[in-house]
Image (tube, rainbow, N blue to C red; front, side, top):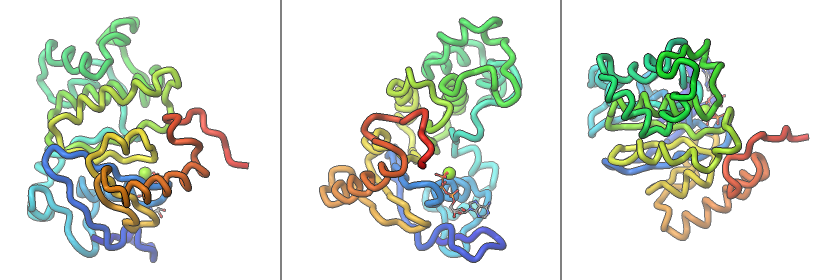
Length: 250
Ligand SMILES: Nc1ncnc2c1ncn2[C@@H]1O[C@H](COP(=O)(O)OP(=O)(O)OP(=O)(O)O)[C@@H](O)[C@H]1O
Ligand SMILES: [Mg+2]
């Protein structure tokens, strides 16, 4: 598929093609502006490609009800982690009418139950505008609990890049792993750690696929690691995990 934002002359995505099988995890890797979020937008049908198609179970999204597309694809992206309301509301939003037991089970699976219990009013604690009373890692866990309870078959998962407590840097991948199990997942990533989890890797650069293949493919691995080395020059060493705080390049 190819896609250009209305009113721009540059292709945000150009001749991009990939496929994720049922239950597989695909890592979509690339530096800023590569087109990763654009893929997510097209997957959710906020826009349609100018050329080519985005398909779900082989069906062009344009031939599906929009509500079915949105019900099938759950999103955990940095931008949409927590809304103003109680912790309970934030989790139950994933499935209106969820029982208390379901909410707690989802929170446990997302490693959120412990810290929620320590909040002043537990599950009834209001989390501020854009969740400002919570740490980045806590917000992310709530978003994972919400997605867990939604139980959609397809998952778009952004890696934590900002607002992450350094302490939980490594552990933070555990709840997503639980969430990914049995789902078709696209992980949007700058990071070697998440790439390692993927059954398939697609490297985007300025809207084009520059590497693609399985992690075990030595050619791809060579290319991807080579590419990640170049990336390190921008974001710091990937093998050290999510680097935070990031330094501003001089
Ligand atoms: N709403 C928009 N209108 C016009 N151009 C856009 C818009 N959103 C993104 N772009 C452009 O499309 C290209 C791809 O952007 P995209 O947001 O998909 O990159 P990304 O890989 O998600 O980057 P990042 O890692 O910084 O989130 C960039 O050149 C960007 O400037
Ligand atoms: Mg993005």
